[in-house]
Length: 119
Image (cartoon, rainbow, N blue to C red; front, side, top):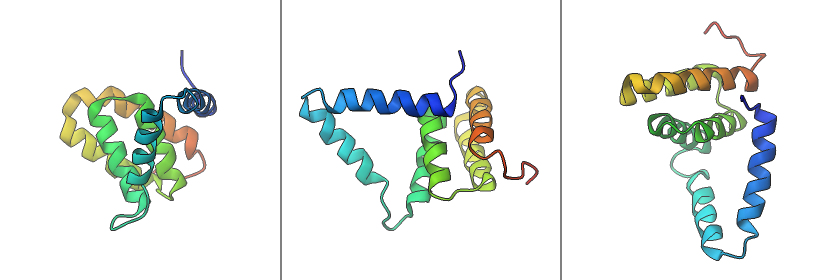
């Protein structure tokens, strides 16, 4: 079953609320640490999201890939920047990344349908 970006957002929001309202404070600590890692610093938030995307592709986590593509786009990444990030993941991870590259391309088309695909 394929999940749309909208369905992913709804599920992620619902489950994050459940996790963060579970009463187990260590979850909140980790989420805070994760959020802080992606704020502007010496590297821009956009570049940090692209780094997260590359790592997610190499680690082969489709939920993470979608999250970081979505965040990269929100931070201003364009199709060419995402393609170059996908390529770094492919070079680092090798052919095992190809199924996740397919997934990434599919989700990128959902997130940036209006942007030229011929770059």
